[in-house]
Image (cartoon, rainbow, N blue to C red; front, side, top):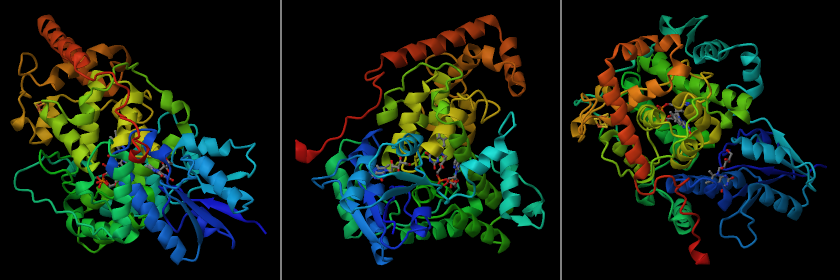
Length: 526
Ligand code: FAD
Ligand code: DLZ
Ligand code: SF4
């Protein structure tokens, strides 16, 4: 009789995982804490704490469900600190004849596991079925299309799943309510507080281990409040549905100088590691609409993010890898500014987005896209440096979702496969959507001079520098028209302003360090 080892990765903590659903009697389940996964980019300490605590709780759940579980802890003497080596070591120890794993969320691991042809115990990579679609189904949809637009993919998903449908028609009579979802921040808004999760002994021990082994990583665990069990994740889901969803749509694009979460769900990390399924999250939102408790623009906007964007970027990732990772259409070469690691900048919008990231291992979508992302785009930061940063600093980051968002959406590095134009914007956009500029030493109204918002000159400089690639794009015609009508002296002054700023950026202390991994510090080893 077959005796497989079922390797469950840190972002596969769900009883509905293919390998667990199909487990034969006698199978051994392995969960492995390994330093390599915390170090390959220098993950935020909240993210490491989340994985350790959630994995330990899930191991308990599996034991309660009757599974035989092997748990490799970080401090074990025989821990090899590599997922592949650990699985092979444990499989041998238990006399297993096969290692089964559901498709890992990152190409590097998936490929390594698939390539273990000469391993003494064979590997089998099964499909991860915790999504609405599979890479195979996405591939079928993508075949023969020149452009892979979200909108068409999303509509098909709505029809196929029946989510937010009234017969064959979209609920509310339209597929897209984005137009109603662009309200800027305003003073009278009252954002819901997040539920505070109790930390039991298992969570406390996991956080203490994260602190012990990785204290030099970004952030502090003093304010850790991520859900680490399914029960806690369900509390967050219910809380969002009751207190956040109705306003989610309208203020989806707003940016606040003081509030990190606004009406966002903060459910991405729980969904990505398996504590919640995207189906149940979408269904909870849908029910809220049909019960009359949230308007269609909010519910459609929310479901579009999960059924649309989340599935779409995953499909894109698996159909385009491994070449996708090397894409750099605009030939960006600049290093990541050092202040992305410590928020030491006098540009208020960047300072707040990065500080919130340091504090919570979270920033909402518009902060990622239009503040840190937009700035990196305008400066021409090289994709690998920016991707490593996004992958390291956010608790929800896994390459299948981070890479298309960074390469495709932020840096336009895939030549428009994902987005028909770059999301570039001047300080005017940030001023309109946020209350940052009133606290900033720069003025969003000025383009040149000592108080001019750097986004303004960088914006025109970006358009000028990349004109060859972008000025034929019909969606950029209007803006290139404005650029060409600009007086020569003004254009020259803007160019000088931007180049001076970029030159200063390059001479700032710490500039050009590839990644702020102060490295893995094992205090025991010191
Ligand atoms: P909400 O605003 O409440 O949205 C609901 C859900 O929709 C999210 O939980 C998420 O699952 C999904 N979603 C929303 N936007 C996207 C999107 N563009 N792509 C995929 N799913 C989306 N999301 C990640 O989960 N992991 C990442 O590593 C990640 N990296 C990103 C990098 C960049 C440069 C950008 C611009 C976006 C990235 N996103 C990533 C998408 C998005 O920013 C986060 O999903 C969102 O901010 C998470 O917060 P939330 O749960 O409060 O989301
Ligand atoms: C992110 C992460 C961390 C920090 N630690 C672990 C770990 O100790 N063990 C584990 O199985 N997974 C961990 N992960 C998540 C993996 O990096 C993730 O499973 C792969 O990147 C594939 O998505
Ligand atoms: Fe950001 Fe410019 Fe506004 Fe300052 S003035 S907060 S740098 S957009």
